[in-house]
Image (cartoon, rainbow, N blue to C red; front, side):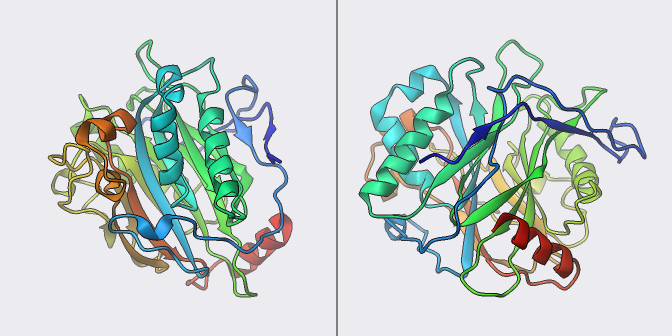
Length: 341
């Protein structure tokens, strides 16, 4: 049974850093169409998890129960047309099931609940595989300057991670410096033992290809904003379609101890560009273990045309320890675990 409660809930927080988001203030706004944002209110107790077909993925080995796999995937104009393509939906579901949390971009359907179609296929295939996984999603509002609005979302296995509904929001950008404002959500793992769970905040971003060189220099400020959002979370992970390779990260690359998963491995289906990445601070996010690019065309023996019908991007993945590796905030994390377990 799906454990999703569609609510009239969207938190927009006024950014603190000097990126055109009023300095020194934190504002909350709520009230949007219930179809826009889906939040999990109640989650099942953690069950044992089958790894399904994860081990067959090119370059990705199934994680053990002490790991959590986080990914980012530009779905490549995911709208009504693609949601009716059974082959594409089947492949997308298979890909998503390799992850515990997946940040997705380029959802283009304001009125049709296209992500529900994908979610149903994910959970149907999980049941057929004998897996105890139960996926859900949280989705942001339609954003963008053009008439062709896009939405961000996080798709996650509710038996592996819990979402903190009080920390799901879209950053407010009153001076319109970003074409698409980041979508933010905080998660906590559900480990099998009594060790402290890994808590982390994900910042989902899709930079504008025409202004990527400008927007990339706002991302370091965005990370500071999210780190000061009042949640007390020190593990802030930026992920999405940045459109640029690390050699062009500029100010983001200058942040002390900034790391990224992909350096020069192509992340597009045509294998000639590095667009997508996962970025984290090494001195805070010590839970990081390994990462890479999932070449689903090779993994599933698809032609390039078949792969392009799924997406023109490849997913980027990263494995983290399911247990909190730091010291700061342990009491708060234990409290969060009790609340959502």
